[in-house]
Image 1 (cartoon, rainbow, N blue to C red):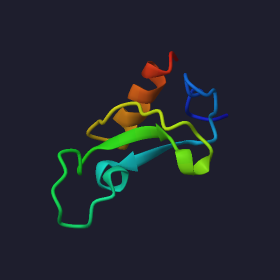
Image 2: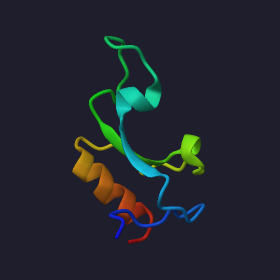
Image 3: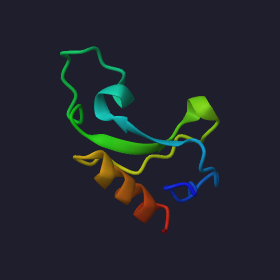
Image 4: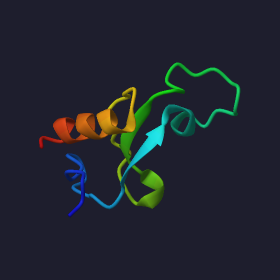
Amino acid sequence: MNRYVPCPHCGKVETIEIVSGAEFSGIDEGEYYPHSDSFAAVCNVNKGGCGAMGGFAPTEATAEIKWNARAGA
């Protein structure tokens, strides 16, 4: 069983993953980005998803909770 609920926009589950704010923004190490130390669940476009995002959170676990709440779990 997948730990994420399906994306509310495209319905996919296999494309959802947790990314760091730095990874999401594509910044180089040492550059400033307001959410560099945060995490977000995203429906990864590079894996066939639609790009929906659950919002930034301070931990990976909280990002997962935010995604599942946003998606209507």
